[in-house]
Image (tube, rainbow, N blue to C red):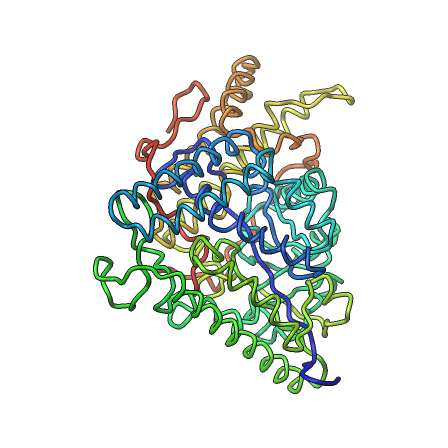
Length: 552
């Protein structure tokens, strides 16, 4: 080693995820959340990666894209809605300028115009070609995952295996690549899941640092398997994401919470953590750019020091993994994409080797096996967010709906004596609705009191769909079951490749018991055509979707 090079490897992991929002309300929670994240995060993050790839850079980071998000970014309804939203963004910027806030209006108009041109040039017919270009160029490693982001430790093992297999197949269909690595939803784990991963062809997955007893300096084979768990280094990750001292909270950055109600734009900088919204200073892009440069330097130095210290501690080159939700970069932290571009250039210049999780595995950044225990990346690093007292009703609902869906599909299968049976759209839609019911997002939003009403309505709405389809099937009402399935499919027709025939045979296994570490914490008509929850307005421009994961 010579010059300024440091030992080991740094890996940046981004997890891109939103629940299924299409056709389920617009504002304050619903499609607006999708369009804001798309405009503020997915567009600029992809542009950063595309620009860096054009400079000849590769293996820059591991990027997780959940199948349920990918489905929305390819959905014709969402594509049309996004195009309209970007045009409306331009109009809102013009309104701000005409109302007297010329600097804000000009800044936002430039951003909106660039985003609209980018969308029309690269995204108008779906996101799949956009991601595939980066994957084919080896700019990124693609991480996959189960279909609709369930909290896997609490999910019936049969449906857990089905969601994972179908999620990997969905990735192959969209991008021509089957992921070998996954971002386990919520970094949730319970013993035995590693065997399911191995059976599905998964070679590595993410956990939170404390799951590895705080030592995330190397990946670890899990129990008796060859599947490697990589842990998030909290010392480095919290340099960015700490709620007390993370970069996005610094005074010069655009304030996430305060916005102008007339236009839905954010006119202020953070100014101070105790400064009320109306008293905050106007946003200044040049001042923010200076802060970005400062924080890039700080992060690079932090990574260098961590790699040197961890390598010395373990007596061999170490691995440092920093992991974040993609939506942090742009949606929550306006300057995040600028910071990301500069960091990915500055780290190699500072002697830091960067690579993906797959690179880390291939380069031997793997230590001794670990007896991984129940864990997550949520509050307490246990399961309380998804299985605590606040969401006990949702846990019970999920168990009921999964048993009903699996039992109904089994009975349909047993009643069909044709060994060459064709696909059954009723069985397919029944599984779609069950999968949407058990999305981890609903319990997360309730536990965090973030649009909790919307989350509960969504869970019960999808549960209602399962119940009424199953009731029609059980009563032998074939035509009604088909009508109901088609009606629900008009709103929830995601994953057209989902095939109930691939569901493993046999009756549903008993659901895993709740982890001992769990503690308490901080309807539609029978037509089968789901309506948006009554509390959700159908239009509006200013909203913040609930944060998928905030710093703990």
